Image (cartoon, rainbow, N blue to C red; front, side, top):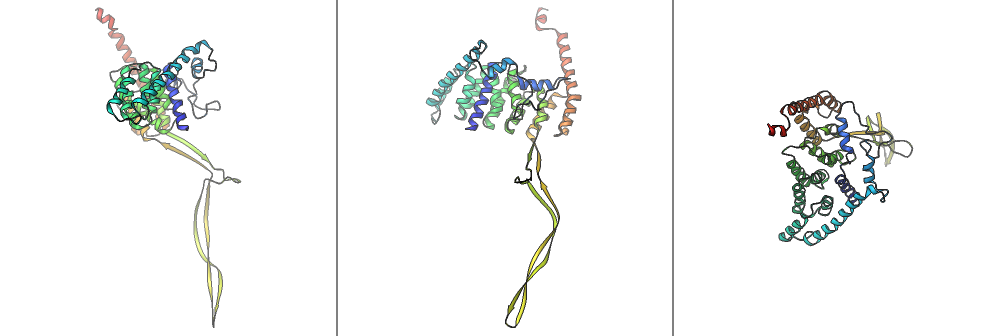
Length: 365
């Protein structure tokens, strides 16, 4: 039940991203870290529970996500969009019942896929991901192909959601492969896609989601995500036991030497005979270490590999693998080496574009 609730909320996140491009708090976090002289608060007493970017969402976005007053005129487009999504979900469930589920006939399933592909408006996409999840690999891949064929920001955002929050590794890999094909010919990655990938890099998600988001960021060459990858490659967690009163310690560690000795003698009497049965004792000398708190750092080789691949592709060709998992070294490299290099590359590209001139002037010449 809890897993279903979490996935419903994640699908709601996709719906919000498709409804408005203003939902970019996580993307703003990584973008702000990439700009000189800008910082983003990721903690503190006012930070949201479970982790957060520390960036305040715009008021318009908050109204879209938390419709406290449905009578507000600005909420009308959002309410209509959600109404359309619910209606589409009902129709898709009918298709699922008639063509999928336990049906194994290939012709019937293909007919259902063709009916599914008739839904091309944005409110249909979150409903497709939710309704057709687990209905067979043929149906799931058809949904991803349908998103890719739209060649739209909404379709790309749906692919990004599947690549990050998909239910299994094969599904996520298929989604990120199609997303990569969408941008293989060049072009700026849409802000909707960036916001979903940045959301997946937030520390409140499980490691599988973060690793999938890191892989997507590396494949799409999202250099503004590097600060989030630096932070995500090693996660720290603490645990306290206390060891006082009725609260036991987390562990006890004994370091010592044990010596045996005769602690007592028990007389044994028989006919014309007497003897003693010795009782041995043990003396322990050494130290007892009581562990009352623990602090563990979990490193992810997958995130680190994505970080290294992304950093190498955007730098001057030199390898960054030697930085390992050292966050301080990564931050120093990012501020003093990577950012100046990227600014120089972008400036040269801008000057070259000005020198060549826009395509319209070349056509006129």
